[in-house]
Length: 226
Ligand code: ADP
Ligand code: MG
Image (cartoon, rainbow, N blue to C red; front, side, top):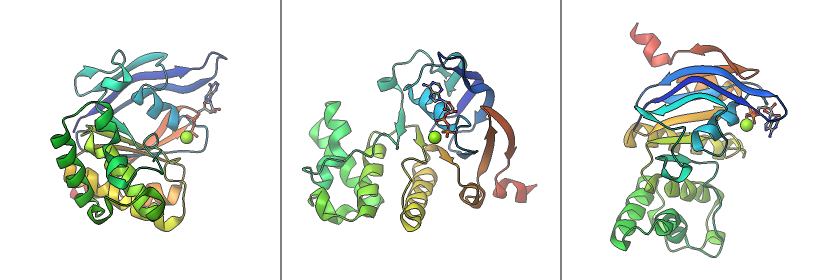
């Protein structure tokens, strides 16, 4: 796990539009932080800058003490759940989970152990040999999450686009991600424009509007300790 720090993080598009405007925030090791705000307020832009899909116009992002700005996206120890959802229908569950590790030429024994551990962790060990079309949507989602965790990221980025689905599946996904955060100690940044969801998670919530943080609500468990 890792802490994530934004210092004066800013994104200005070539047309002059300021999508993220001087954002400062420190996210602690192992924290689960929710970003909430209306559509267009800059939530996804922040995740895309962390993931390296978008250049940072100015400001800095740190993962622990490491400046992320100059690190190539593929070398960042992150997982972007919204990017990982592309599963291949001709692959079985095992092959879908293993894909990222295969592409990075991990030894087969390491791949095998990580895939089996992750599948067991999220309760899909029984379907590893099933083709994608033979498994439920909920299990497809777990397959995508397993693919993300076998790479052992320090931070997991979850955009609402990944979670745009029916309510039950969304709840299952959230409970899986909470488990990943709690047990595997992976720091999670979770983006949603659903207010009920943002506040019901009981985590620290960062409220955004027009590219800026308007306020931050502390996690319920922290409040109750005060
Ligand atoms: P959110 O995820 O909060 O809905 P985004 O981070 O996707 O919002 O987008 C923030 C703002 O940046 C939006 O108003 C969007 O229209 C704008 N935006 C996104 N990409 C570009 C671009 N390439 N050029 C100009 N504006 C953009
Ligand atoms: Mg978005």
